[in-house]
Length: 90
Image (tube, rainbow, N blue to C red):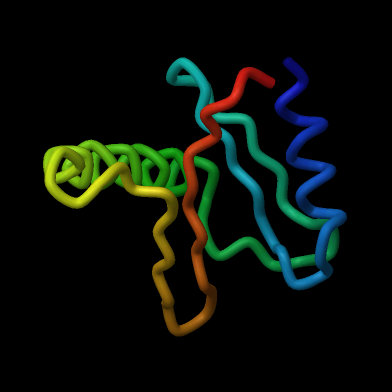
């Protein structure tokens, strides 16, 4: 699938979306909106996504009791990060 195209499509949804990253089979596909300051380096983006995956795995440990997690939101001083799992075959 064309994950970079999906990044473009998600960026077009709202001008407030600064960055889109998709992790698929340990490969990071990402895109930053043009003209926007990137707060993280590419390496920091990769670390952030890796940590998001670790947090997702930890949430799944409670899935049998609470149900499967659908999304996560983290509010930082400069940005709000929305993380969700794409489960359907794209």
